[in-house]
Amino acid sequence: MKVAVIGATGMVGDVMLKVLAERNFPLTELLLVASERSVGKKMTFQGKEHTVIGLADAVAARPNIAIFSAGGDTSLEWAPKFAEVGTTVVDNSSAWRMDPTKKLVVPEINAHELTAEDKIIANPNCSTIQLVMALYPLHKKYKMKRVVVSTYQSVSGTGVKAVQQLENEIAGVQGEMAYPYPIGRNALPHCDVFMENGYTKEEMKLAREPQKILDDRTFSISATAVRIPTAGGHSESVNVEFENDFELNEVRRLLNEMPGVTVQDNPDTNTYPMPIYAHDKDEVFVGRLRRDETQRNTLNMWIVADNLRKGAATNAVQISEYLVEKGLV
Ligand SMILES: NC(=O)c1ccc[n+]([C@@H]2O[C@H](COP(=O)([O-])OP(=O)(O)OC[C@H]3O[C@@H](n4cnc5c(N)ncnc54)[C@H](OP(=O)(O)O)[C@@H]3O)[C@@H](O)[C@H]2O)c1
Image (cartoon, rainbow, N blue to C red; front, side, top):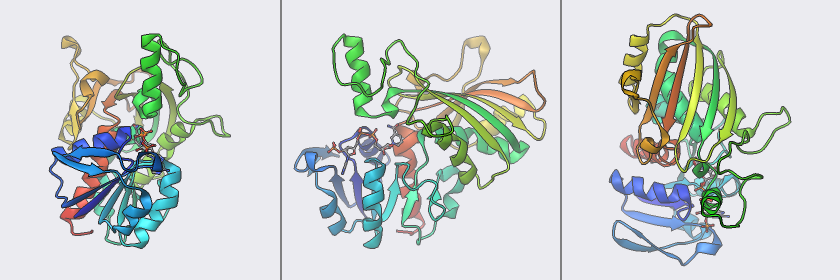
């Protein structure tokens, strides 16, 4: 099992290598791939030194799986070249997510849709993954009508440059800006670029991707995405209206039974999910479960996950594990 990690020198790439090692992914050969800037650089994986190579050399090596975390443009240009030589691509960028010929996969929900013919598989947006992990078991039982979500997203979701901006601001050092404004002691209602309809691209990803993953266009999602000065972990305030009524105890049970979801919900002990405690964890944490007292069949909840783990690397590695287990690569 030859695996290429594209974007190995980046923030998601770094966590990807950690997750592959932790889960003992059954690889026999590892190719670490990045831009021309990093070619020749030495990196260590499971005690063994590797030299970073470029994309053309990686295609020539015909890996079984290539996990891409190197931006949309790199994926658009290079994923088809890998697919042509028989490699299965698992892509972390937004390049292929809404392409109707590509599957958008959260393994706990829809990995069963994958076949050996799927040569480019899309990993959903980080804030989408944690949202659908909590919505899925509830949708199956009560059928969602409408979701209103506001996100509180960490700077690690933007990449290395944004983490550096926050660190520079904390240290009082002038440096390159990843955002148009300071992020320390601030909240930017602006994740990704603005679109013609006034929403940001991140907000539209949250509105569209869950419908594709759950294969259901009958519910709607309205999103506001906000960047806050946390270093890692995205949080979401979520209001869900269902067609059918629910019992809070049953909601708690359904969430607890969902693989990969952990309920942390006890006001008496100040128990609720928080990004610093979700750091380096693979689970999606859900709490603050409350009935919306202003509207029928409506639930409020708070969802937190490590955006670099389940929001990116862990989900991509789980897809790769499924491909190996089912003999699809
Ligand atoms: N951060 C998150 O929470 C998150 C979550 C889900 C998905 N993603 C997606 O994952 C991708 C990477 O994000 P990140 O946060 O890890 O960014 P990052 O820290 O800036 O890392 C980018 C990586 O891509 C490589 N790269 C850039 N241009 C390249 C090119 N032309 N050819 C080959 N490699 C190239 C970089 O290599 P060099 O070091 O050589 O420049 C680096 O390894 C993005 O597509 C992002 O949308 C991020």
